[in-house]
Length: 427
Image (cartoon, rainbow, N blue to C red; front, side):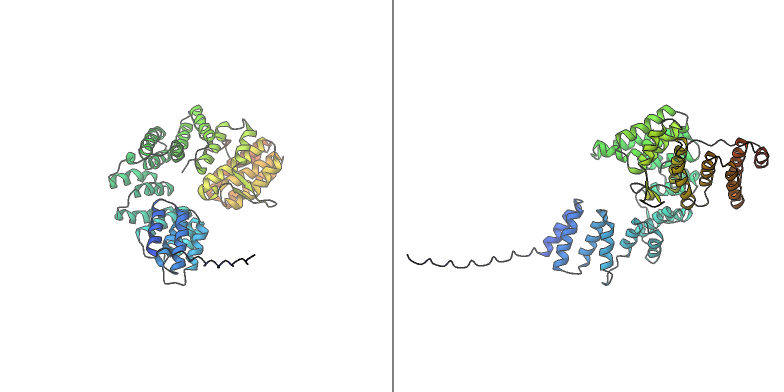
């Protein structure tokens, strides 16, 4: 047989030609325009592989990561680029803000040029820090910039700084109607609630819901998306109905929001809490189960936090109400040990606030330690004279119930009746 001829080795395939950088940037722009941020990040990395240190590619990558809510990676990209002559300080400040490192973010912003974007971020940071007067001052500076929808944030800041009565004056100054958008109508209704104009607030919230539905339907939003976007209005409306004594309507509103489970986490938490406030001591087991879904405890540690990032989304007053209602429900359920454990951490979570000491005294009374309850209430009143009236009234109530009539007489001429649970005002 003739020997087999050896096959000639096949030439190795030539590498595919590299995509021109202009095409990569075109792809990058297309992904960003389509909100395809993960793909945009990958293409930005391809550009950087060809042109390491390209400022536009780095900027696009950082923005895409932020838009994709990948804040940790965005901050890592910024830090990796700090040796280069690029200024990504604004993006870094925003990432720190998103990580709730508010003081660090504000310090970084203060060294930057006061652009409208920087001022808006500064206002948001001040808002989160609770520095409402400073926040309003920044928004007043921004008014000169004629930024679209600025009035929505200005109204929110005025309300949070205790200046709800100035909201209408601001609208008159800017020549804007409260019903110009559903977001603004929502915030103006909030100001009316602060002024105890509940009927007016109810009507404005009904208008806000109608405007929101019409606006979002015109923008081709899906029904579920509309429900989620307008959930804060639905919760706010139920809250106003609760204040107006329309308990059945309010309860139906809260139940509907909880059942659909389409609300954002903050609105859902408020709906759960306020439904419990309407129920009071009824259906304690179900109420506890619902609140247990909002509160987490670190394994093996006496640390509590709210679930689903609610610690960053709810105000201090709202968080205090949720924890307080949990303690009250535990007392109704005779789960004294659990109530005591939660009460022990509340003063550290809400320093200087009255409710933790009132709850601690309630736990002590439940344990038949009325004398100790009277003692801690007296100590708190002496340390916090501005809160002494309500604390002395509570002390009188505890003393009278325990038969300590002289203590009751010394503390107060009357009794204080506390609500079983506190309703929340949504943001």
